[in-house]
Length: 260
Image 1 (spheres, one colour):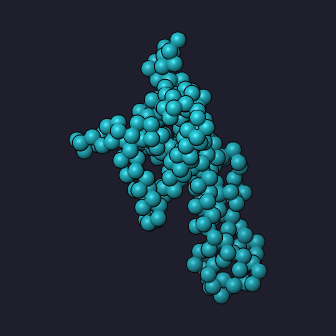
Image 2 (image 1 turned 30 degrees about the vertical axis):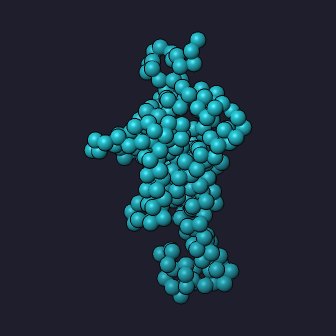
Image 3 (image 1 turned 30 degrees about the horizontal axis):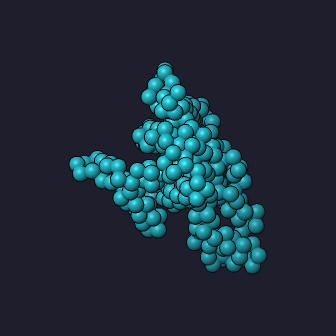
């Protein structure tokens, strides 16, 4: 039986892991919407919080990938459309087990990079909290919290305010794994022609992947006001995907294409 043969039924031409990822993400989004309207915020438990927050659990490094923006269907749609377009090809090339491993590794890797990014961003704030709790110095803390400079607040109130800040940090979405998939497609099929909307000229996959990476790096470093996209997490998915593919190649697993 050919490894490219797929089962009949719903989405008959889509390999099993790609199909199930799309179904699970779609059902998770729908269930989250329904429960949210019933007063239960599933994303608070399954979305990824900062590791120093009381709301963080290690399992969130996986579950956050299956949570998406509830304000509209487009977040989950475009992520799953990318999985459908590129993931099914990678699964046919690698096989279901290796593709699933790649998807999870890049998703978890994206989460790890996001945690590192949060830690770097939070260092001045956490240092200011420590200065206040140890020395009573609010000169820098007042710039982070809505407190009045020179007024003494109880340690408990400052700790509670810190926890509120940490608990408010949340990342959701499969974009890290999706960017890993895009990176893999560009590495395996570098000269494959791809098209962007409103651009009638085909772009080679390798150039599109490089372009996406540079855009994410620029937006992450620029840190535009009002931008709540985890750009460094996207880069993290690409980074972990790159090293995983290089590791497979170094170990001689396949010939760079058929790694199953």
